[in-house]
Length: 372
Figure 1 (cartoon, rainbow, N blue to C red):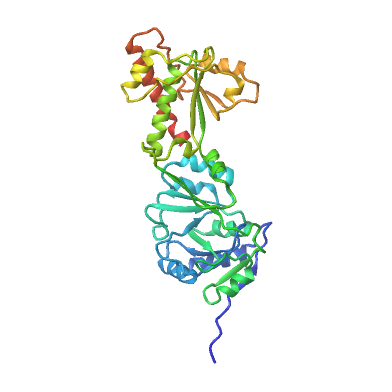
Figure 2 (figure 1 turned 45 degrees about the horizontal axis):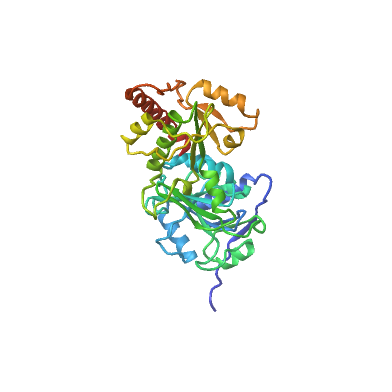
């Protein structure tokens, strides 16, 4: 007579309200010993293992039948885990603030300590699930935990604890039964980093919405929109492209692929004037082009296109506050985070334009980490 495969212990885990300390401790201790535990999430059930235990990861891959070359996703109990990654952190933070906890896995450049065996090619997937039982267990662990959907590789993910216990009998130590998964569909997976904004797996979130959340629409404002703000617009595009790894060529990603849009306007501008000759010449020295620029007057409708507006001087910021409806405009700030006005070079010598361009570039570089 063949020996019956042992079934894992199945324990109830409420989807709302606090999990008992005893239940949390049982799950945490099983993971600490290198055993596999099935945890509920809002998407599907997940198979969890200690990420810094090679034997546990091997058991997880074997249970799932998952190829070794595929990465495993780090599951975290709070958004602060993002600070352990490389740039672009600002974009990842905006996505996390909007969609976490929830059905979005971010694949980011960097390998936090303890995740070396779970990551691939210098990139690591990370997710904050929206199930209190799952996050309670994750928060109790003083070691990283990876999870993968509860299914054999190539099969549909399981959404009920009894099915998980039956399918993975002999592989799991414990199953927390949080009821049927609310969404019943695996999370979307978005890779975001230098040269990369790629939806690796479609989920409930649309790519255009992810782009809109991750990126920013930046508007720069001066007086006539022919000197300082056009220079700021062009320099900002160049600096963003450099930081995001956007290169030339037809197949290369663009700033729009990362959700960024950059523009400019003037509080006393007429429509359609070209950039000043001094601004064109100074930017040409940096390999940038202003020939196609045409001035635009600031208006409530134009300002509403942007997520943030930056004035070259305090007077520009004040003029925008008067022009725009109270409480119905994007944040207004002085471009220089140090609080210095950027002087108008109009009518001045080439050196005045060079001085303005350098001041604008310094201010933009100081703000890059806020944006990307």
